[in-house]
Amino acid sequence: MKQLRKINAVKNSQPTLEGAGVRLRRAFAHNEAKLLDPFLLLDDFRGDNPESYIAGFPWHPHRGIETVTYMIEGKIKHEDSLGNGGIIGLGDVQWMTAGSGIIHSEMPQPSSTGRMGGFQLWVNLPAKSKMMAPRYQEIKEEEIPKLHFPNNIEIKLIAGNLNGTKGPVKDIVVEPTYLDVTIPPEISFTLDTNKGFTCLAYAIDGEGYFDEQSVKQIKDTQLVTFDDGEYIYAKAGKNGFRFLFISGMPLKEPIAWAGPIVMNSQAELQLAFEEYRQGTFLKHK
Ligand code: MN
Image 1 (cartoon, rainbow, N blue to C red):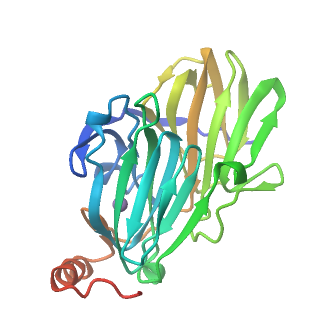
Image 2 (image 1 turned 180 degrees about the horizontal axis):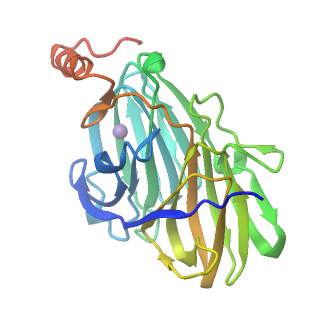
């Protein structure tokens, strides 16, 4: 018999001020980084008032990580030190490998209703890839497979493999799965997971359950972490349930983290900040 992944913990995302004054909700960060290895951080920056987000995230560096931005309302304008620039539009995903370093700005643009929103996940890079050349995987909404399952369950497959379909994100060391799952009211389903991989879910609409007895109700903006096992169970409540499901292979390496830079040792971290001050931070131009 296959082993169900039990809920390990349920956590409310925390209001946080980031960038030049963006009010967002932080689902997890430093305190959970070891438990959620290879994932470092998840920010939920959905907002309905431009004043709460328009200041954006002006020029800042990253090294040693990947940042994954998924927009579900409005858009983000980005520019970087390599001369890249563009718009992450509605439904699009930008999977950015900072590697040895980039300096970029990420500026939210309101939709016509004033709403803007999406999610940014930080994925750690293994020691051997921390200083790799930076790269982008820019995925447009229409390139993301929308898989339909019985009972009108819909899954957007951003990364990973599901029922023989491969998501558009390629060649990431931690073999990530990143799904946007929508389940109609009162419907349940199960999803196979790799044993030994880290799995988490972040609720983004409605309410539902990840326990087969439907005891622990999970609501919008709550994070769920799971024990090890071979599948997860999910069931929607009366209003339906939408959540992000994210899974990846743990790196099991030391984490040295300060602000936007994540390395393996304090010495590497100090060097990164020293290079940033000296203007020698960028290794690949
Ligand atoms: Mn950034």
